[in-house]
Length: 333
Image 1 (cartoon, helix red, strand yellow):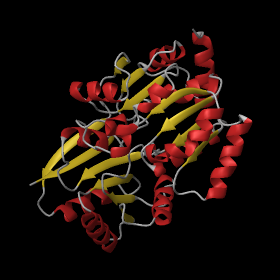
Image 2 (cartoon, one colour):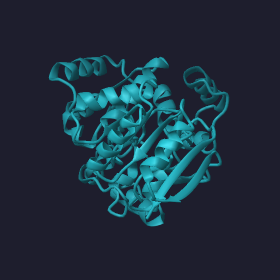
Image 3 (cartoon, one colour):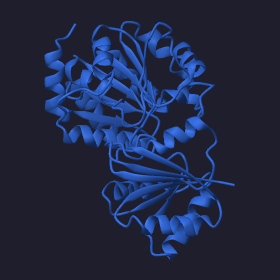
C-alpha cells in the first residue's frame, strides 16, 4: 500500500498536475497492490501516467511495450524533459547506441525502458540480470484477433506473465469492446486483471459529417478558416496521402504526406516539424498519430471513411488532447 499523499506529490513534482484525472489514482494504487490491470481510457484521458508514475516510485525497471518508434521517442523525450530517466530500444538505433543504453540500465539509472514487441528478444540479458518492477503494454488492442489493428508480434506477449508471474502487468488502449477485452486478458495470461473503463464522452470534440463532393476544395476552405491551427488528414492509402498533400501545397497550405513507405529519417523529421508547429498539416495513413504526443492538434479530417468505428474513435482522439475545443470532419460518399 502507498500513501495517497506520496502519489499526489509525485504527480505534481514530475507531471505538473495538482490532482489525478478519473481512474488514474485507482489504477496506480492497484499496481502498488501487485495487481494486473486492463485499462480502457480514451485518448487524452491520461493513460501513460498510470504506468509512468509508478515507475518513478518502484524499485527496479519498468518495461513499456509500444507499437511505434515515433511514439517511443515522443514519450521518452517528454519524460526526460520532466527529469525522469527513460530510454528506448528499437531497430532505428545503431549497435553502439543500444550498448550505451544497456550500460545505463546495468548501472540502475534508467527507470523506464520502451521497446517494440519485435525487439523484446534483444532484452533477454536485461531480463535475467535486472529487477523488473512493472510491465506496461500500450495500444493493447493490437494483441487481439478481435481488435481492429491485428499485429503478429503482440500475440507472443503472453509469455511475459509466465516469465514474471509476480510482476504486475498493465495493458492499456483507447477502445476495446467486451470480446476484445476478454481476448486481450486471455492472450496476456491476466484473466483476473482489474478492468478500468473510463467514459468515452469527449465533450471538447465537435463531430461533423459531410458528403464527399469536391473534398479538396472543402478541405482548403476549412484550413484557410483556421490559419494558425494544426491538423491531421487521414487517408486510406499511401497514394491518397501524397495526392492530398500535393493539392494542398499547390493551394499554399503547409502540408506533407506521411506513410510507411517514406524513409525513417524523413518521417522523424516530419513528426518533429509537426510537433514543433513548423508544419501545419499532416496527410497520413492510420499508422501516424497512434500516441503522437502533440497536445494542440485542433482538428482531424477523414478524407475516406475509416474501416470501423473503433478506428475512427482512435483517430479523432488525436485532436484536443489538452481538453480545448477541437473539430473533426468525416467525408462520406
